[in-house]
Image 1 (cartoon, helix red, strand yellow):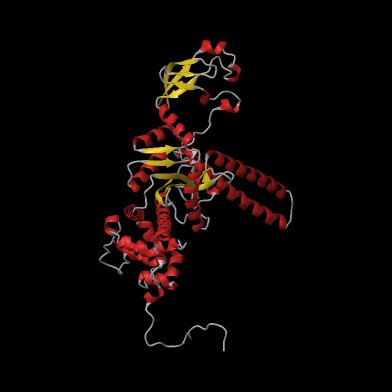
Image 2: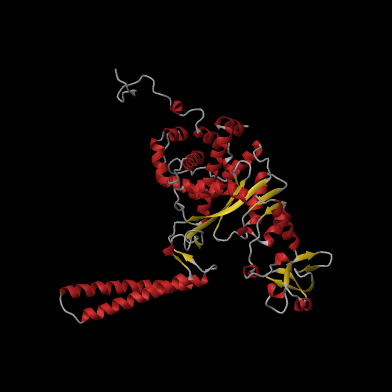
Length: 478
């Protein structure tokens, strides 16, 4: 008697073949995808559901959307891999009705329905809101750099272009010198070497012409750089990666209770400084809240953005970066000067009052200037304060908003630790699903589509883990 479990004989005929539905359990995530897509108003979301009157019958967008959601849920994002999976994966056969579109059809669906796919991702957040998952009015925002389909060698800035032109010029000069040496010698090997050197020089001169022509394009670019493979990708500095990467800056807002990505966007600037108010507004609307507390790191600190958040009902928690050189040099910083509202003056560490003397406008901001030359000249602490004739303090007209923010930060010492715990894990998860590599598509609209599919898959998996597939399907149907 065999001590091993034996399977069925592959050649054994059966009278009644197994039903395909028997291979997909009631708790299978594929059933959640099926119910979710079937309940969507595809036409209202922007999917084209009226096929052309001529030609071969088209695939229904619901089937292709199910195919993509399943793929991103299972770390299969490539259209060619999805084509193969549709032919051999039993769950996908059940989900698509054994339809197996070619990779070009699959890729074109993702390329042509970017806005509709983004709307479907947003609809899942609406569903989570209706279920009642957003009971805490706290969220965190962060940005992360994702690689594009563009190497650093194919990205040019004025500095990189100048350095590259100098390198090519040095190589040409070196090859010309070797060619002069070869001309003074004789022999077949020398002649073959000379022919090879001439080919290299011709190639480098062609490169030099292309680089010279590229100088005008770099100068005409608004941000002073161009990318050859993906024109929308930009060089961005990153921590721990040397000179950075060429890619995109992905913004996401994650709720504090269930760590769902409630809002996201993709931008082509490496800085997060101008994103706080916009991302906070998107998250507040998506969660359906009147007030929202938003946690962000110091990269988002901007007086204008913080003021804009207050105006839309968002209370930000953002640490202020230390940009003054006074503290670094061992002198008193602005934080050592106390503002006295009743007098509209600053009290310095020496006890003197610095009155407002003038108001200037810099970069669109109204700044009040405070100083008192007589007090500074007689102050014993002046060497610890300023090397100038007097110490001057600048105050933004809305500085009270920044001071209120600082008081909130002082009363919430663990806010930034909570921010890291909330918002950084989803980025790590999505990058792991991508295989820690670059986007599959080029251009900003297509990259936004990719991120929307990743976010939809991430949120769907999170909710399935919290509620279970059965309750989630019941909630979708109702």
